[in-house]
Length: 318
Image (cartoon, rainbow, N blue to C red; front, side, top):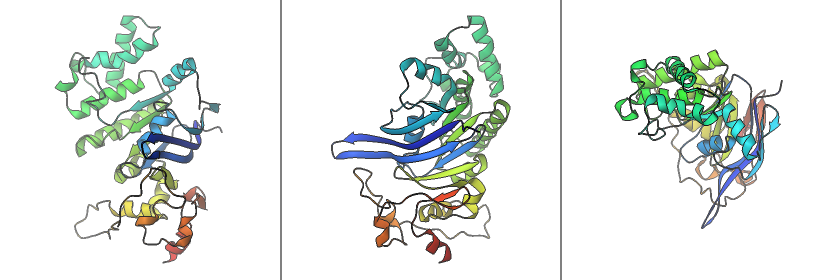
């Protein structure tokens, strides 16, 4: 079956006064319908740029993007407008992503107005239906964003993303700005919506506890490149890349009698501007050897589990 989304060797470089900044560098993956791909990594690794590039909010430098088997790498303006109905985004900060001069109903209705083809009464009815779907009480219809808490503001963002009945949604750290108790409510809402509408998610986050709960597959990024990709349970049970191991060691354990051995990374992050060939994690890796200066490619260690490390077999037995 054709995957809903297929990305091949995607690159996004930014010109700087010092050279080319490799924000996304040769990233490939597929995403099946109704599934969730978690994209994790520390700040600056390129995960948000990846999501925005797939949606053409940031134009790609090179590579291929296929949506429902159709090449959308360089869509025409009319094609891109139609594509927007099927591909949406939920932003990280629910306050800055909303127009403070728009009421809740106006903010949710805006995509319907831009698309056209509905009367005012039909759009208002659809807006109220969307508010009910995401758990926003009707009494907030004429409220403004500053009058609501973070959880309710994020529900507005989710309702806006659902307004055009998309098939694919990029979730750009949608709960990182929320309190922990509210995070759980929003995550559960997104899972319910995925089941109800058959949605496909790319869930971008730095929180591994969250990504394990919501994702079917997890992709770990470091300085613009994918260093490990595997089904969620497999990644946590059998972590292979040294960077992935360090990330997982930082997850707190809710048990005061049990402690996890933390892996503290040494050194500084390598510059993403004109990076040298070879492993970009090499400068911070305790297992680095001469062969790590060669370009690293994703190798399938077991079915569905890929790792970009030439020494992972030795690390597993050490």
